[in-house]
Length: 344
Image (spheres, one colour):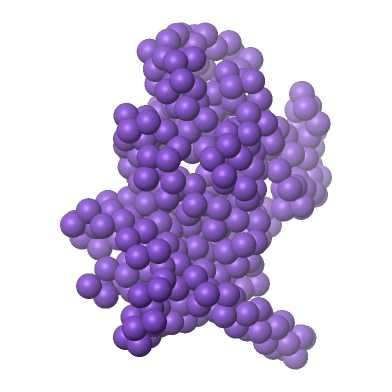
């Protein structure tokens, strides 16, 4: 067994070595300067080393310095499940419709009790709906989806758009090719619980039967090709959002402000030095039998001088504890920030 583990780690190391070579190709022209090239290679080596802490799970990392164009990554072109990260492109697609004059931020949206989706934040739209409120403004749904990761809110936005395919069409129109959305939160909730649409957990289900059902759901989520992105596509989305290439200046500012309000959970945020800000969105699944299918965070780091950095971290099928996963993402953020901002 120890030989098998060693062989697996050696193979993983070879794959990482290939990733390093690919990442060096993403160095900016300024990296032809030996000192700049050394800094670039040092940060790449540090990120590669950090990524090994995810073994035997899988990790994808992408980092971009928009000022120089330098990029670093580990498995940055591999697809990973988005989970709640998808709420940001959904919100962007809605705000594009606001920019076009098709919707207004203060327009009233009527929700019914049947629109409630599990995983709704407290307090948020889902919480208010459960309490009997039915009228909401569009801006309430946007804030609920992005800042509070409210599942009821994002599914209401998807219905307003006319389905998840409209989100993917919007991304393609902006030349973001490796991020896609094909389902909503309710669909993933049924899949994660290994239930058919409309089915409820059997009342007489034993603990053993529940675990078997949850394991089947876990495997289904990992095998599902819907709502996925590469880390590279995620930082492309963030970069285009930040450059106002996705939305009008007012809508861009609104979406980034909502992302700044997402202060929990603390993943990338845990690695921020004093004086730095973060506009981000996490994606999460619950754990089953000591394994976690998805643990993500993507964000725009904003330094005290206004300089920015794009970071995306996707973790899949992790056996690590919650604290270890959070610390790994925080350490990636801390290392990337030190490698880029510390080079001034």
